[in-house]
View (cartoon, rainbow, N blue to C red):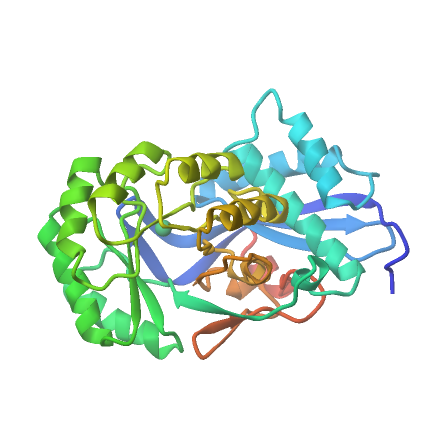
Length: 364
Ligand SMILES: [Mg+2]
């Protein structure tokens, strides 16, 4: 047991990877055909290594991101393994360039690795280190079901439910509103009334168009419509929300808790779904979860299902975990799904440890 020993950060090891994914995802905002991932190892002196990954969405971004993480790592080498102290120091270093976009992604990756190392050192699952406990979290299968047309969407919807889920998400934002409606109806027809269905516009619409289109979907029984307009347009989200019947979900592009606070102030969404990376890692998530609690906002996750299973476990307003298997190939132990629920790893850490052979295979 390493609980009483204070650990020091030694150095980071950063590995850029291009990992194939089984179902390439076409969204209205672009296609994800492989997972461009940066794997981060935070080595400690005489203690465990913390592991985390971040997704940079495009292979061309792997090199610059790896270099940025390595440079930020130099600022914490030799310092105590205290994630809040690390976050504060890195935020300080980023004050002039700004902690948003790539800089915040890099910071978040280091933050997640630091928390993973601390949980492994204390021999606790991350949820337990944070004062909670791993527990089953309702999950929806977010693999696939991209912009693939009515006929293919129906078949894929059936496959995704058959993988053990009771909820799925369909991407919309086709060139015409009629196709959006036809696709949603085809998916509902394919999976039946008992399966929860969400729809994601990936920021495709302008406010006026969003209101018209979502009104057309209001009687289709969708749990939520996601990011109907530009992700940073809080007023636009609020206008849409006020004019439609379907609940509005957003948050995967909140860069830290501050934009989230703006959405809450404007009552711009019914649900929130921070991304563990863009919200600022575990540290940013905890602050977002506190905001959600005070606003009574049901909180879901975006990507990063392994660590999000722990983070939702300690979020008082936990709602849905977004399940994708994009990183599964590089993990020693994939996240378990049982009866439509994600089961967070009970091993020490955040659920991330590597399949080293796969990391070698997918190295860029
Ligand atoms: Mg989305």
